[in-house]
Length: 176
Image (cartoon, rainbow, N blue to C red):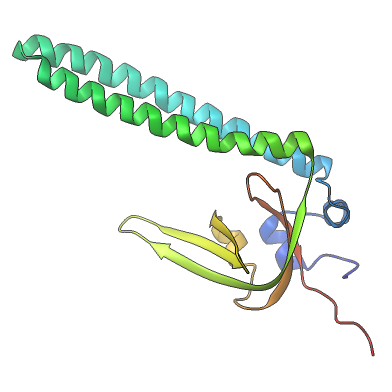
């Protein structure tokens, strides 16, 4: 294996030589664990803030719509939209909980092979994805995506629950 990390991969994935050494041993480095914890906290705080805003917006709106029209239907419909928004935001928080498990366990897994780089697009955004064999990493950051060359062989180090890529390297060919 390489002694030092590839600078493009290290920059795109934000890992150091010490991080890579820990990952090769199947562990998260303390620095990587802190980064995952910060990302988890930020996601949770953002989602809770959105839940609060949805509650402060939809509950009074539903109440006043029912009073104004003397019909409960608009209030019920707005209440259903509110519940749907809360359920969606709760699902995002639960998926973020996988990062908590990864941090607590401190484990890193590795997969090696050709990396397929592909995107999926909607009218409002582009989603960057990577696949190695049967393992897919969805919604990776653009800076992570562009650090890889399509179909080149890499070893990717990732957390098993949240499937977050924490480091990568190109394998060194054995000398004859």
